[in-house]
Length: 212
Ligand SMILES: C[S@@+](CC[C@H](N)C(=O)[O-])C[C@H]1O[C@@H](n2cnc3c(N)ncnc32)[C@H](O)[C@@H]1O
Image (cartoon, rainbow, N blue to C red; front, side, top):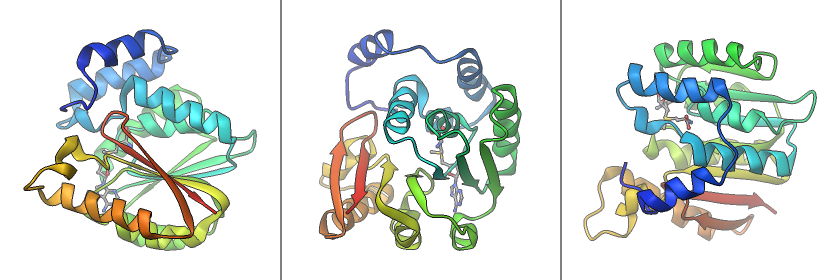
């Protein structure tokens, strides 16, 4: 992926951040060896940022849309309250199988519940008040996912959305389909007076929205 920060700065940040634990490190490696689009994995630095944010918030319930091989799910679950739970949805059975394996290896099976199917079908069936939501699936779906989830987020809760700068393509003269979807999402967040937002230029861009 074209990084928004230079490779050398990214490496320096990783060297001065807590390392991935052994299971996350192996999952990172196996995802690169076994999947077609390993670039989708959050990776070391973003993983540590998600973990740190989750530790700051101490959420009871987290929803993740887009499990992939389970990397970000495990990073976010690190900050859960003692009896908390992270629910993650993905449409892909194969990568969910890999996620299940590594979640068990990391002893997180009690904390993480995986659902297979289209997010749009599964989300309305979830009866929780979420403290934190991480949207990281198909880009054209983001706005719909927000519409479905906003009433399930507690007042003061947070919605994070990944890839909102789409490799910088959101500011190009001819943005592609995914960058256009990200532009729509970013505009929608900015115009919504129920939210306070900050767009972080980390990795591929993370929109942080707080429900007032
Ligand atoms: C960018 S990856 C998620 C990466 C993961 N959160 C991480 O950081 O390691 C996006 C995932 O969204 C899933 N996805 C795409 N469309 C979906 C849909 N309609 N419903 C549920 N999941 C979907 C894909 O199968 C893929 O695994």
